[in-house]
Length: 203
Image 1 (cartoon, helix red, strand yellow):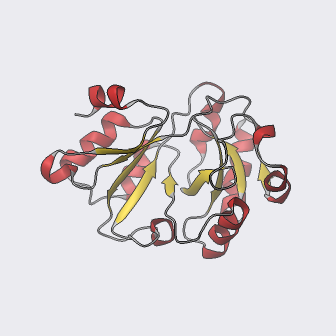
Image 2: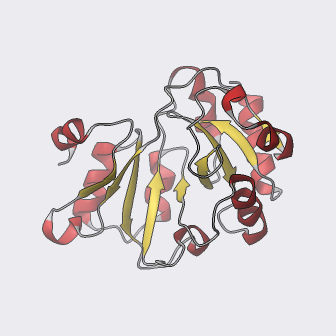
């Protein structure tokens, strides 16, 4: 990846496009989380129902925290401990930010902050958040390489970035919506980070 490619990604999202890009887990599709037209197009490419929630990805921890100023102290501490990393954290969303991404539950938001190290480091320069979902047809295998992405998706996106071979296991999804009050959390989907490893990290 290069800084120029990161700028291409940002420009594509700002223009209302749909991009195919490498994250720290699998290849994903990205769109402006506030653009209904762009998100609808992303969901059509995935063959996914539009009422299903998706995560909002930030390309750094600081912008994620800035976008969610009402996170409680305890939840914020968990963010800082767990992210960046191969996790999707579902947290309270009292301000109803990014409602398109939330589906039928606008009071909850899934947040991703990928670990952009090594070849993916230039993507840390992207300043816009994106609604993101794996670059596959709904229920299909997660793409480890660009050529693993279905050909019709590759042909239809506005931008496709090749980041080489990725780990190929989707993020672990963790429900932290009550963590502030009771310290409880639950793994909704085990993925790139095991529940055992996560237990050792949660503050």
